[in-house]
Amino acid sequence: MPEVTRRQFIRNASIGAAAAGVLAVGGPGILSAVEATVGGSPSALPPSQEPNAQEGSDVFARVIDAKAGHIKIFVGERSVDYTDQTLAQTLLQAAR
Amino acid sequence: MSSHREAPAISKDPVADSTDVYAFVSPDAQSTVTLIANYVPLQEPAGGPNFFEFGDDVLYEIHIDNTGSGTPAITYQFRFTTTITDPGTFLYATGPIASLTDPNWNRRQTYTVTKVQGGVSTLLTPMGGPNPLSCPPCNIGPRSTPNYAALSGDAIYRLSSGEMVFAGQRAEGFFVDLGSIFDLGDLRPLSPDQVIPGLAAAGIDTIADKNVHSITIQVPISSLTSNQQTPTGPNDPHAVIGVYTTASRQTVTAINPGTGTHTNSGPFTQVSRLGSPLVNEVVVPMNLKDFWNSQPPVNDSQFAAAVQHPELQNLLPALYPGAFPNLHAYTKPRADLVAIFATGIPGSVIGPSFGVGTFQGGNVIAEMLRLNMAITPTGPGGAGTSTLGLLGNDLAGFPNGRRVTDDVVTIELKAVAGATIPLVDHTFTPDAAVASVSQGVASNAAAYQSTFPYLADPYPGFSNPATTPSSNHNTSP
Image 1 (cartoon, each protein chain N blue to C red):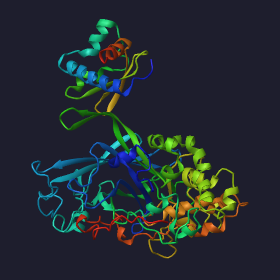
Image 2 (image 1 turned 30 degrees about the horizontal axis):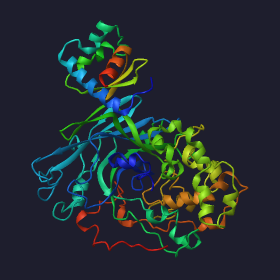
Image 3 (image 1 turned 60 degrees about the vertical axis):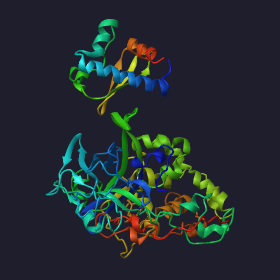
Image 4 (image 1 turned 90 degrees about the vertical axis):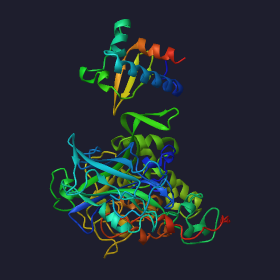
């Protein structure tokens, strides 16, 4: 699947921000929840950078390659590459 | 013009637009080099009520390559913060601003300086001054900023690490005849010979009364070299540095609906860069300009073809028929321009009268402003000084670094027209017309001062323009 369009990205970014809001108040957060339900792999998040450490920050997600599950997450002054095909598809479906 | 609004994307983002870079051995403190990075172009001095300022959301950087690797060994980072004294008024000043702490200054900016070297970031602190450092206000007029010289003087800080720094509004030091040059490449002094001829006239400095925002830092030479020593002479392999500036924004900006606010997130990514003047402006083609601004100099081999075969070289014979036959017939890659812009100029090609140059060694194609820090300054206005720099037999000027008074437009026009080809190709004879090539604009003395920060206090809004401009001058050539 080609890279998402700008409109898709903006939608996805909003979803990403909303998702981060959930995890900020919800303990383990969406990443581990998704992993538990669909077997996704949070491949690029070392323990020291767990999202719940970003409480109060806006978090944006961009689906770079939905087929490969490549999602780039922006928070603070850094970005994190995250791979989860199911989550990427879920975000795109939610953006329809 | 130099690099004001030189690419489509950055022309829409003036706060991050790198407009000029200067690097020169400080004429009044010759154990130091002064580096100037200008941003926020074409400021009308009266442009209130929201006067000009740096971007709180922009990372401004000055980079120094002291090995010839094409990558910076030292980077100075500047971050700005805006604070508002009274959010309940629209006024920039609620009374005369008598000092940098005056509560009448309603919208002030402070900043931090961080030095990055060897992977270590160090927040630099001022000696005895406030931290963070203060910018001066914009120069509004005799009621709001009645003693501007005192305000700008108080905004000069000596840092504990040895540098001197200033950041704030300045008079625009660059000078150029925009109206003529961008009207199909006309040079007013040569208008009778243009393909659409006109009357000969002196050039007009289009930006003579404009302001700019300037970051100026004066650094001991010994802390810029890779061996941390003052060079022993111009041929010392540590004598040459490459300088360029960048502006970066965070990757993501979201406009928050219904609030009028923005949220930025993610790592900073480069949106503007500048080394030598006019390269991205008139050498890099339109379809690569934004890409150029995103790239580090070490990747510049991808742009080499545009330097080796510059479009302007083909335009000059077309715009001035018959004036440049030798240039028109010259088809070899422009090794002289590659040296000037991308590698530095070996002393051996400059000639026996100099024998020193700005070549850093190696052959990394990386566009930067290169400065041989061991060449004694000649100016401004001193013996041997020429605003034409190297082309005026003054090796202390552009393209050996760049002083605020250098006529870089004319220097580069002459270079592209063939003046510098004989440096690398003795079979080429420049056309006689090269001697006449000039934008016809003299440097604006009111824009400079002889001491740090070298660019003069900004023009006040109250008196610029001095009179109501007359209506549209719609004239034929």
